[in-house]
Length: 250
Image 1 (cartoon, rainbow, N blue to C red):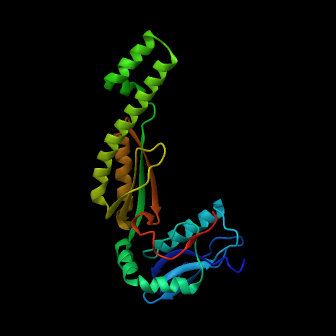
Image 2 (tube, rainbow, N blue to C red):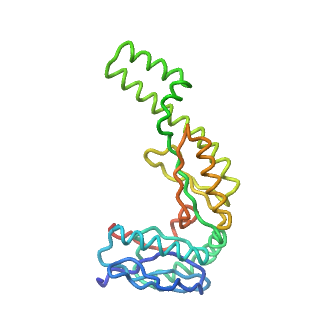
């Protein structure tokens, strides 16, 4: 490791939390993981590799560590590639925002994140044609006067109808799921998805939450697909401004 590689920051936890046995972090060989305690909170860190990249091994190591930590208590997770210059910088930030961190850790206690992405249904053309007058009109026009422009307009209309149906059904599904979560956060736009939403779900209710989501997906299968991810570290329910860090060259 080079002298200026810094310290890789995985998460903030309550002070005194023991690390899971056999814990290791990013890098090759895997860097030993340790905690820096400051008051009632602590940062989970390791030495940063000199050439950190978003390799599969390191991404999985980062994610696995966060999940193992969260199984033992609430965690404020850092995104992959967050590096602080030194321990003094980390301790200073932990001290300055100790009260804020404790409030968020309490909010995340005994909870996981579940991400729900809504996509348009596949193989739903027949139902779209049956329900959408504009699509039927464009289809009939194409049959009478085949051509590139007519095909393009029909394709665009079908895609828009599929997305609209998925959006309506997806909003219904999310309304059903929301009361079963502690908090809801809208995620960034994702290509191919009409909705991208994360839920902060009590850990004890996570199986029931996922079962309900799967039931709703089946009920609305002619209009949408649900892509479920979880349990996840609670990235969507913490502030990005936790530790003064730089993003490594990933």
